Image 1 (cartoon, each protein chain N blue to C red):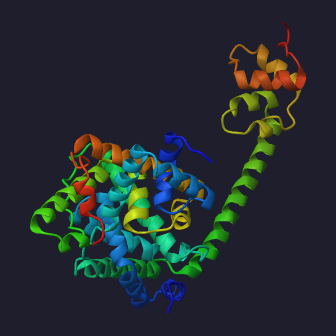
Image 2 (tube, rainbow over the protein chains, first blue to last red):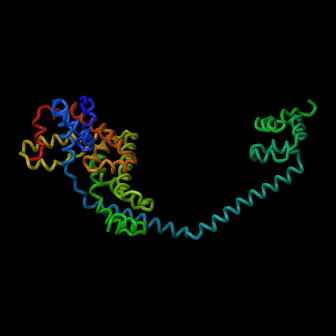
Image 3 (cartoon, rainbow over the protein chains, first blue to last red):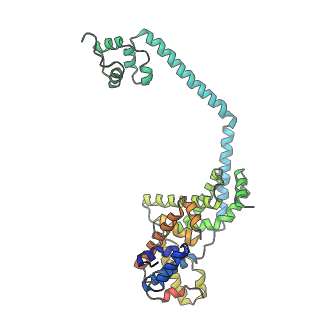
Length: 178
Length: 196
């Protein structure tokens, strides 16, 4: 297999590291022995890599560990202080209480919602609470008649989100009397 | 006691086991950081930071690779982060320390020693001017002597990728040396470094 110079140059690095297959290596060497330019290139790579590989490692400063040890001690101290302030056994009951509170909150909101919706027109309620309840809650049991009544009211403010919801669920909702 | 056993002890809070790990790997890590950062002062500070990070993160080590691979990856990432941070801050780059003279040079005459010192200095200056990814390839392979497989594990890429990236990095380095130095002219300099 005859190689072109460009192919040989691409394989120089792998050749230096002995990463060519026996077949590739043979083809590489047969080219290099006859091509002066590629031979010179190979020597340059070998020279450069040889110098890097023979660079003496520098000595590690004696006080390197001292600084690390000091910082580790500080970390251990910090950790022990933290452990003292918040004992681990606190986390489980605290989590339970947090979940309980969240459940109670949702439950009371639901009760308040049910109570309020009994007293006022549902669509009006939905409009007023547009921004504080999710669309799923807003759609909860409101009726088309109330929506019409609200839209006929002079103080009615058009809320795009509500309009969209009404249209999706009931089609176009004209105001009463219009 | 091998690295894995020491790591297990460290994970149980044994600082003396960590000291043993440190003693085992300090030289290679320090030299890696020194070559990446280009000066001893930064290497000193960053190596300390690296080992403190190793201690705090040792619980994350899952024994899926060699500890040294994990350590090298962490060290290299911290060097890269630091270099990028500095590039962002546009701070003045620290002038690299004078490199050490290679072992072979001690066997040559004073004139050649001087030339060799200059040559080595030029090479490390050129390496320091490479981008971090190219620099790290050359340092891991040619200075630290990691195999292609080990480099692939450290950099989390394929062996083929290592092969091509290393070739590119060396090509760039050679190009810098050819453009900035006259060290390639003639054959004498090349012979000088051949083993006696």
